[in-house]
Length: 582
Figure (cartoon, rainbow, N blue to C red):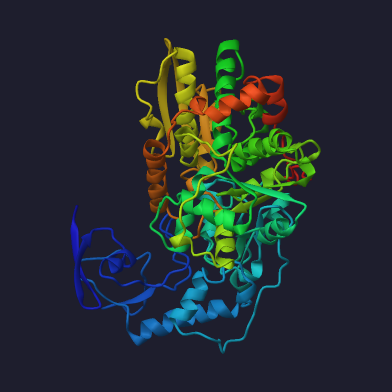
């Protein structure tokens, strides 16, 4: 590859051709300010915060979009550059709701960080804040247009990465806004509530709905038995919120923190991830054996479920009828667990800690109830859990490790890899292969399902029957697979689809500033837990799951299992996008 020689602030550097000024500057320790730029997105160059001086050019250049050339001389420290950058930030602040203390992104806001960088305490410009209503009429996401800086990161994510096209532009000049079609609230569109927009928003214009106070109140209520479940993807992401290395494994410290917060029991969603594999694996075998609808598609990701209900409702029969691990846990907490503990289900408050904003939506679906009460009462994202830990003064970094509680505290390696794209597929095949063939897979590490390629496929030989499988993550990739099915051109028998790029490790509720590089680290740690940290690596080897069937469920796909662990999905109203919620 051709190399380019240039200088940045009189520091000589050599970089590959095609490198931008922004990227080159990082190589010499110069961090040029940005807002619209995101490492996983296309270059937009519309905020102009990153302008720099290039010798020989009369105009300042946007560092994010300008490629370097031989002999280029870049200056980032001149008064002209700093005044221009500061001026752009001041203009943004003048049209931005400055009630920072009441903002969820206070302390993690990129605009706030730039105001500190440029020593902007108060702007002398006239304040002109957009006064559109806050959109908070859904269970998952809150949009506050008064905080929007029009960087277009959310639009890029919604249209390109996810292919949902709910967020878009409207009007021009000083009337320019980020909006939804016809300016409808998100709950009246086909938004999937995946939360990827909130994960890339640099300010507090799009955030998850905060349920932390609801959980604090439940814990304080002496009449309530408050339990929580923790999703597989939390244990490799929560550390990011406390400045630990990307992908740090913090399972034991996380459990300790939750117990200190006051939960009566701390359980592991890995338990019901294993249960999902048993039910889903048997459902797949039944469909292949008895001529059921194929391909069968996983149903663990609620963002994906919302997407298919809205855009491919004529293909709903392809979905597995299994509830997600979150909802299976919720159902068992209000039935099996309630009976075992002798507690009225109405007195149990079940809290989920999830990497996903769509899980908040899923928990409120009309059909997700057992014994007349909600399966899951409250869903918190990873970000909300971190907020609660910080609020209570728990020093996360020095916490000793603690174990999950019984009876829902045992999980396998197959369950923990649910957090990574391809993990559900690999976990299912570990069990399905052994059930059908009668012996373990030749290699328990199913490499074809791993990695960050958008769509992965493989052939699996089940006693002479070759079964084609596929994995897709990100809803734009899901569309490719669903169009194949729609055209009758799909060769697969079993498909895993996750709404979020990277799978749950990249969920919309994970710590801010998550990039594909961060997700890769989390995935690496996920497989490390599977291989090195857990006693069992196959769902059907989980002794607690086997005991559950013996004591309560009787058998996979049995009457009790169907009653508690399975459901059916429904078309969304094409006019307003709504699903009936409690």
